[in-house]
Image 1 (cartoon, rainbow, N blue to C red):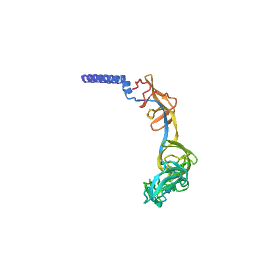
Image 2: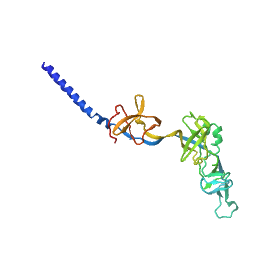
Image 3: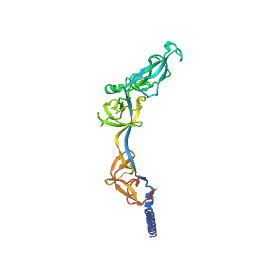
Image 4: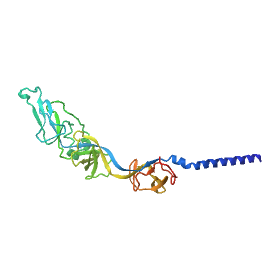
Length: 309
């Protein structure tokens, strides 16, 4: 009987201890819960859908060769526009000394072969990567051609290219390397940003090998004559502006998608409609900018008192 009494006493004290610990935990439950809640403020912003792609440009470019070997002096600045026949540089033949009266020492003016912008840099692809070839030729073989970028020194040899004239009155074309051409159609326009220039380029040709499209810009693209291949930004979907929250704030409660927001010291669940989203943010309809949003949502937050820190 004594042993049975001791067991009853131990059981009593065990149950009492469990009830005491459970009561303390229940009393401080909200404190521990709120310590793990993290907030972010809903803010006005814009979600963009952009992708970096490589463009290979084609312009109407005519190289200019030195008529004789000698010392060259350029006229004007690189990228300056010249009329047809205007001098882009002067050339003093080899063996001549400035100030001499030798007949063969007369300097020669190198004229612009056509109107356009003059650049000293050539790459050997002026007659290969052309607008016509981008449309009609095998793109896989055409784009495999290697460039030989060259800027002449003060001494040039006869027949050496001393620069090129680029017709900037004709729109630039380009081949865009893409990972997929699904949804793109000939005649459709796509939005591209090149440096500080943004333009809608029209699709002229689709290619599966290499994967991509040939596009025509509405005008000449600055920088395309000196850097034939460069990275551009493709806006493949229209941007969405509104109130943004971190994507981690979205929570499904039952069958409803929503967020937990903080108002007057209490956390509440609000059903929302997502207008747009990317990898990190979501644009929410009819949400007040500046309101604190829980970014660590979980069950049991509804009605919980919390302080925003």
